[in-house]
Image: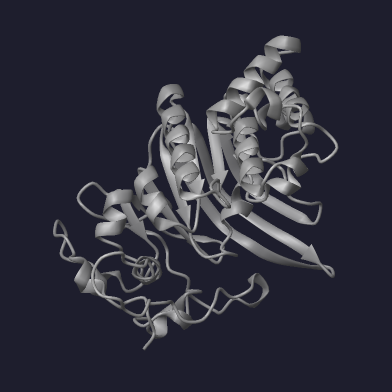
Length: 352
């Protein structure tokens, strides 16, 4: 085994190194991100998973300069080799929506209730593609139709309150696609959508990624969706990346006890009914993190060393593309070159 900061090192569209975020409250700074490293290639689909409060969304909001004034951000974020972290408002306005687009979880807070849908889409098209007038309206209609909203021409003249939550989510996806971004960050993009529309949206995002060689970051609690949509998965816990792996290897050969716990919690549609497994406890708040490995209090295999120090990312596997931050990997992993059956980790993420 070897130790490193990131198990994948390739030429990239986006490189994030040592990203740290602290929030000020009552003259104290609380750290929410602890040195995040991410490399994303053009055309690659990356899934980011973990419980609420693990830092998945904050990572990308920090990169795009969308955090409040009480946030202190440090580190590096390079788009095509050029630093964007800390860029001025003019440059960030060119990047947001144009080079990097983000679909937020809550469409009601992202759409302006005072303007019609067509006006809001037209504004995005004007800013990022230079389209105006009838040309912009036709493109807006095409985008609305492509995300599965019927009667697109009529719907452009309606307000957000006349749409359901799921339809507003689709409008947000259309607005994100309006700038033809090089990188799309989709934060729970199918929340509030029924299964049929969800499948259509995911197919659309995947088609666009392949057509445009667009990078895609999918932030989700739905591991099944991430497993189908992505080529690589990063698992986050308490503001750190604790596992980074090709998608197939992560599901077949999970290394970190937390990852195992997330996978074991997925309900099965086959076989007899049984009680769902769950990881006990909850994610600790950023200002009350335990010493050492932050997952140790919830982990069944943790030892004394886990409570003394934070484990570094360890890279393993024949192609060195799978990494995990855990002191117990020698106890969990098979011999080098071998493959660990899923049964070998059954229950590892659970405290009896």
